[in-house]
Image (tube, rainbow over all chains, first blue to last red):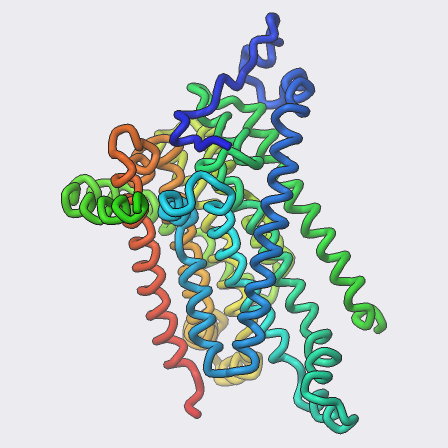
Length: 242
Length: 219
């Protein structure tokens, strides 16, 4: 792993095939020969890294946010400070946070994962607490009337009813993380941000690589959003019975 | 230990290079606020009007989803590659596009969500539609509108810095040039970016809090 800033930029991006196509010579937006030649060594590995980075960030973020939300839900006094804490994290510009962490954690995935995780907390915390809070009082009354303990009420009533709100938060957090993770390539040259920054570093922006990277990021976000919405439907079968 | 001394160096860099940092902070702020101003002028009236008419839910949702999925760096790249303006205005166009979704969506939901009884009462009192929007819906929706403005402002400051990294100018220029400014300079400029974003967020947050307190029914 190399840092862009410290390594002084990537190598030459427009390769010498011996005979570059006229599309490449004119820096076209959609040079299929470049896409064919570099799907395997540039785009596909970047896509895989991007997926991995997103899964790690959202996974860790969800774990932390869920624990914080349990605290904020159980102890009402903690809700405001915890909400303010995730809000301050969310307001910190990513590029500044990456740079501030760099001297401490170095050019590692840790440096880019900490900010990415931090940004997910805002939405995930809020939506989880809001979902748990939104359970109507009558529902809780009847749960108590059926003799459920507090723990059973939480696991069988409150948590399932909060799933739509939690999943909505998860979708927003995942799409945002996929988008923000491109900036991380400025520091650690991994993920789909790498081809994008490489393209921008050329004297005349290398359009095919910029478009390819950008399209892959947006497609990845759309696919992730669709998969999570399917998961939400699978988790809440009762919402379909109407 | 190295990180610790660098940390202190960065704090020393700020007073030693105060005029440079002030100048670059000004550059980033100018770009950010120009873009924010244009975005507000475009998105706020549209969001308020759509919210008032209870129309365009899909537009408001679609714009916010698209805005979230579009990486800022890609948009800046497209603006530079496609537009034939000065670098400042190419970046400004990209920033405007990024700032519109939170402003538009929040304005829409702020007005759309105003208690319909309050709007009906105003209509019954003979207020015109414009008066209803200005005197009833706008004050009631103000906290949520400001929340959108706050997110857009912070987002634009962060992205204006990234624009500087790509094309020079502003605090991003310092962050991108470690050879010139050293690690302490990069870190010092990063503190400035973070401080500017937090200050703007705090100011707008305070305003939001004040309007919310004023609007909330007395308990």
